[in-house]
Image (tube, rainbow, N blue to C red):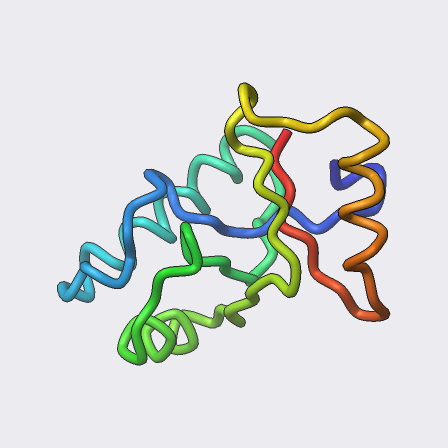
Length: 111
């Protein structure tokens, strides 16, 4: 992905609801363990952007992430593509995405 010019960023190690984590050490473990795994796998540093799983957060989470050098990024359009059994045809999916696109859009898409 990096070779194609994409940023690879942090979405946590275990996809937990980060808004429920009150312990700073546990919160940081979710970010840092992914950083370590990424470095071991690729030899590269992960980019310091963070997207909370499911978009769930609280002010303390944002503050901790910032203190660890992360910029928290959210999406402006979430396409409900995580359930493979509830997908429209390709043309309908394309239309839905293109009808909601705008300059600076951040799309939430899954593989």
